[in-house]
Image 1 (cartoon, one colour):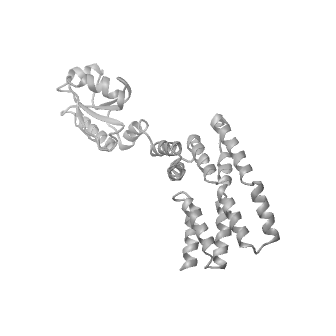
Image 2: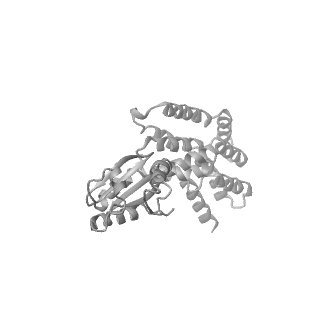
Image 3: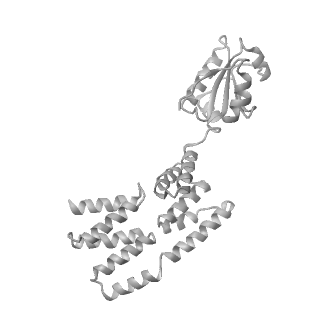
Length: 282
């Protein structure tokens, strides 16, 4: 969303400072034509917040024309810029600024890309759209691999998509200071997932196959059971071997495709087996 720069005057002062700043950050750049450094800062700030209109309103104050506003903000010299939230100044800079100092000033107040991805992933999970959540939270974790709140959502997604070993490994990286009630809930979910992953039905099928290693119907049933408890890599391994042994095995091929379709977009496991299947077919 592009930014529209608003010139602040006494007519719109109250609306911008007292009302608009309740909805988003208001950035006020104070400038005067006779102070080139203030014009430069105003332009740099405008360029930096371009595209962030959802989060920040860019405003300017011509100190020569709007001396009363400058006085109300207590401006002592130019260039100066102030950030306002809920009617109160919360941060500011004065004097000439480098691109790096401007980034430090603005960047710490704007949502980071990983924050947006985390919010979207949570919304997807709330709607039981685990596949979409998988891609979003994976991107967030790639941007910041240390944040516990991002790790918690990724662990939850791992558990819901059967990536138990990945969930367990990531859970082991949570620092003591972050081991709160959300952490305890995930530990409990992991224990349940481990129990479900080795159900009596699965154990019985595994034992039956040991006695009848050439029984493909039993293998398909085991693959289906693995899939139900999200042990998808083991399911795909069985089904791919069956298709590899007999390319006319339509039942195994269809089950293989069904498991692949159920995997989240961008799942490396899906990519791996689609490539293997393509190589086998062509």
